[in-house]
Length: 365
Image (cartoon, rainbow, N blue to C red; front, side, top):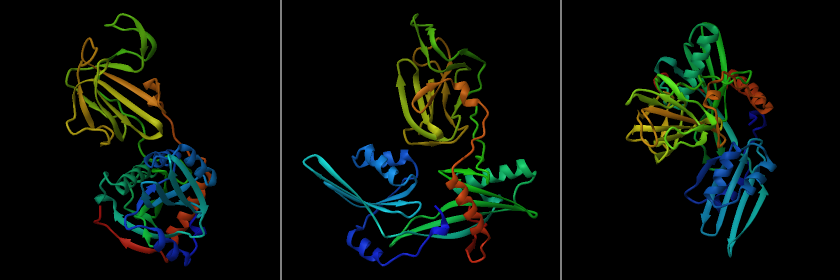
């Protein structure tokens, strides 16, 4: 989104929204292809529609579902460059007719700068997580943590709909030194597009040795025939704590005859981790649960096919098993998207503009 391209709302808003928007409006993020696919799946549409939307503009922002009935759907697709689209779906006799129509109506972005004291930030909130990442980065590169951090928040308005304010950039300051950071697709980056924060995976368990390595073919110790071992086995004490290696969301919890009690967790960048042979799974863990890196998710055991207590640790990348060792390869993720750098320049300008509404929130977090 380029703030310099923001234009004022036009009278078509009143006609458009009063005539079509129902009392209950649903809003969906649509900044990635995956989010678009989830949207089309939710409403029984094909992924071809998501691809068509992406052809119109590679970076849609949000989708407003204005009306959903048994045989029809009416929605508005807001794009980052304000080339917005109206979506109509009409289903008759099992056949869906889909129309994508350009809209003259535009959204407006309003910006506010919120300042807070870094000593009161809680890491379990989005702003707190970003602030902690910025603080750690300044400590690493400058040698001191920031005294204050300011958040540039964007409030998007489309007609009479006001989207929740979202942090899009941060500014850390201390003793005349400062550092900018910018939100992009849910992650925080510096001015050079380098990903901030500790994104390295941690070891899932305090283990004694690797009892089995990742292999395309190995002799199974119990079944006595060769088959792939799509993970590593970490021999550990019975009842030792098993941790999530990264922040993520639980996708599955259950029992499998091979790996026994298991937990599966999805992470960023198409990564999924699998933890098997557990003796116990954390009681309140279920699909959809959010977990933090280093959070205990269960205890080492020997459930399923196992000759002794150990953790089976597997890793998938985009649905395909990979050697877990690659998860611990050191790397620095860096963006090369020109849209990111264009917005970063605009965000810096917005931070420095004196006419932005500034709120002090030192005790807010």
